[in-house]
Length: 233
Image (cartoon, rainbow, N blue to C red; front, side):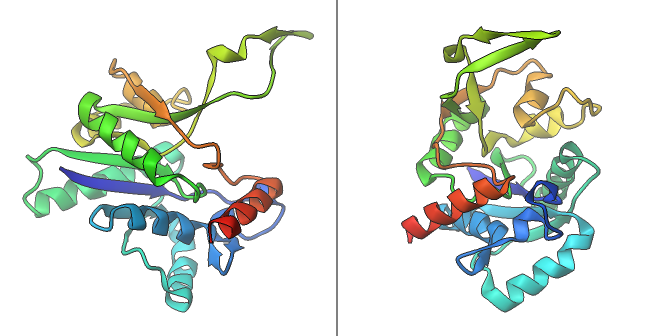
């Protein structure tokens, strides 16, 4: 079964406190986004990699790839107004590509992954694809380790953290199912791809994620990612 990975990288990195979008910040000589792409390429070099990137970021990205040398072959698609629209652009690109290649009638799986999650474990990727092949939809999750409180008006109350899990990416789906899900009108209730699929009434299965698979959004996240990537090397 053909496998595709859509990497979404639309963040401006405002929480980093600088002008450089977070996906372009270098770690060990490579931008975060390049580490992410190469992680998936190492996992399966035959999978179709699609990078969804704001149009005004693309010249800079292409310059980085030329100067540094990205080891992961990929195609670039213009980002949209929101993450939802960016994913939809990536899916539409793959739909047209599959039609052109005569593959539209064949089953396929597609993963959606955040460009600033370079530390996903290959076993997690494999587990998500394996479960999605069985059930049509799979996401990685990890237990919540902090104590949680629910805010209520002027006060708050503790909640049972064992009832909650933190959601990661890649989120993997049957291609036709996800394509159909993204034909729905956009709503702010769509917080991730799983929520879009669930709006169709399709159940989403969970698999165990890896704690290191952090989403780099703050300077502290960047420091942790640098340490983990150095450790891997």
